[in-house]
Image 1 (cartoon, rainbow, N blue to C red):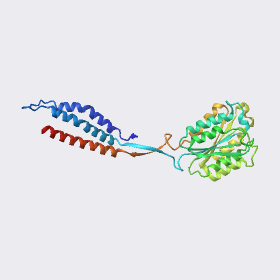
Image 2: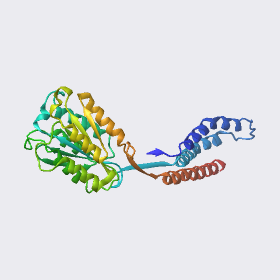
Image 3: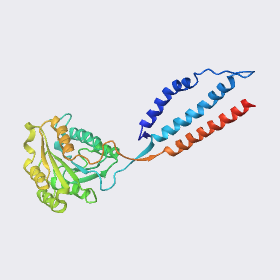
Image 4: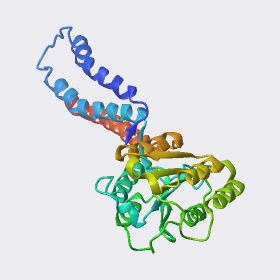
Length: 308
């Protein structure tokens, strides 16, 4: 619940604070009574009708402030950015030049990345000697996070099939209706398995998707252990598809890579989510008017009884 025009409620509170002063000023002139009459009944009538009158005015002021209730909606198919994280799970990812190893560091950075993209659909592909799509692009980041956490070594034959991994990632985005799609391809080796050339896959992606699909490649491994990374191929993949090669030469660089991609592919949707609001002032307005009428009737009846 929110108030779309809260100054109306503030004005009522200001009125409420000065009302006693105005009320006392109006009652200041002395009244002369003759006979057996006194001011007691009139005072009690005023107090009895004061509460429903003020409550009615409060509800009317509250309705004038336009209270609204909202619900979060999921982004439409054409909104946001669709992203596929393509993760190398070959045995070389167990190297401990990252803490505790390359794979766990890459998974931790990926989890942090998706936490900062709540309105974007993100999916996961893993690859070694062959690729495996674990999760299509989804807004269910809880399920996606569990897939990332469970991704490990040994589920696929050992090797590095960069081209096949990239092809499966692109296939997962074929049904996407967004105008912006992204593949984040992480590798710590070179193509030594599979039958698909990575450069041919990148060229096909460019031909089929144009500027709507970019591939950001990430070379994993510290400078001392970088001998097996095919940075040239990763750089060409990124250049062909309009992306960029990131060199994660240290564990801290990996988090910086995702931060850089996050800024390059900023979401068009608000991070707090998409909300639809509806006005809820009518029940308050009717209740306020009802209390004012009730207060008026109560005042008339009490005055009539006091007069009798």
